[in-house]
Length: 161
Ligand code: ADP
Image (cartoon, rainbow, N blue to C red):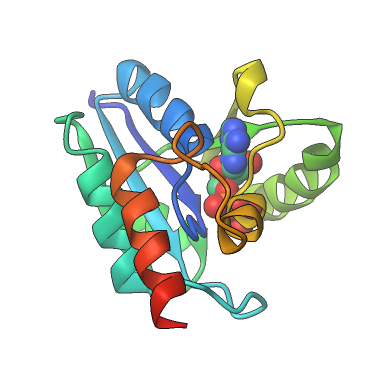
């Protein structure tokens, strides 16, 4: 049986922390769907289409990684693509409470979906999309923090704004 997993998130934009989870996940699962979930509570910096495009470019070296967008419940998306695993990254204790809450809710909504966590590499434990945007706004060097396509897209976006 094919092991299909989903790796959901905002990815606004994708960082090397996300890339670490995706690359390690792609070795464990037969197919990994990276899915940009449209979150009504968060206003985004990049549009959904832009985020999907950036993830596609950054993950093209992984043949079993597919990129998608979805507006709706994660558990419904998992059913749609036949996924049995929800793959999440954990950075610090501060992620734990939130992850515990959504994992419990997802389990209530779909008992067939198991959530797996991968601990991030130490060098990415402080890294988030928000912090990258914050420092990039002031011209900091972000080349070690995001894939090259994202670095370029961020500079272009700040030029437009
Ligand atoms: P969400 O809005 O669902 O938190 P994010 O795009 O911020 O979406 O994160 C998606 C997933 O990637 C989450 O599981 C998050 O914990 C994980 N993640 C984010 N940044 C990192 C990082 N630096 N290292 C490991 N995992 C990360």
